[in-house]
Length: 408
Image (cartoon, rainbow, N blue to C red; front, side, top):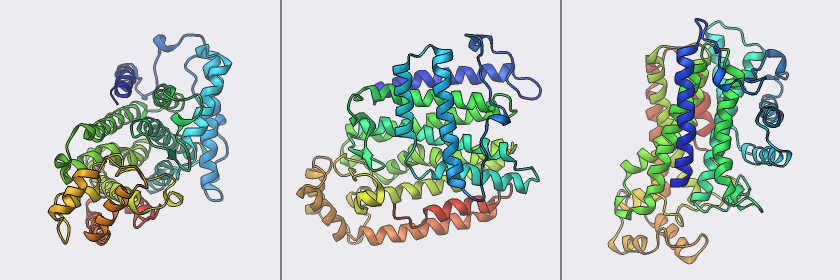
């Protein structure tokens, strides 16, 4: 992870400099001012116009329309890199294939939520929802999908994962290997290129860049908390550490960012509105990751699109933390704890040792405990409904319906 973090830090620093520069240079309307440092060669920067967007059929084909925006973004990258960055045809083809392979194939929940949340917010605020608005909300949605893509490319390497979204992990493809490290941070850099092309003329541009930078840092810190577990003992794996990992590694970018992007583009600036939304969405994100931990153990590869590796990878997961720390009914016995000490993180997927740990989870009634935890999370989230006023509850309800008692 150290090499990936180091490279990621460089791009984060570059993005931060851009954000600070634009904050100083923006006009009264908030548009991108003169950018001499990035205006070479002639023709840069390239900014999108309404005529560049395809027809967005929200009513008839929302998912297909959303996917078409990703195709548009990849086509923009393919056209711009040779023309303005002197990228040879072979390398340009590599980036196109890499983007096609890694940014598509997921459920797209995070990205689609930006469109859904944005549409609700625009309508409730009496603002028109035209084709350009829908397409720009979808662009923001794909910024999150691409953010997730580069995180997964790096994460799969660190976890020695085999499959992702029902196909081999990118780094396991012939001819890829460690090139995937550079591919991961290239996708990250392209996210900022996308934001600049489509939002540099908008008042909210600097806020969007700042939000992406902050969320990226939060997620990388969560990734550090997660990967540092390789250097810790099982006794260090507590529920508090698990909550910190999943809050920063998953909840901010998977839940809060989708709604915060929509709020920002809709023109909401009140800090209290963001604080209230964040509280609810972080709770959803933590619950979502507990689901993910549960499905890693109990879900099939056909259900979840990958082979569960948490036991082999020594993950600080919800199931393990409850079991190892005696938070089950019945509580773990010394003999059962000795089994975890001997085998957790040291056995292979599908081995007898892994199966013995899953059997131990059954003996501790962890599946029943998870179901109770799931319902408690739902009740806590619903109890927060009166705390949000600026953002309609419909936005949160859409998210909750997608994740509550999911099986994949």
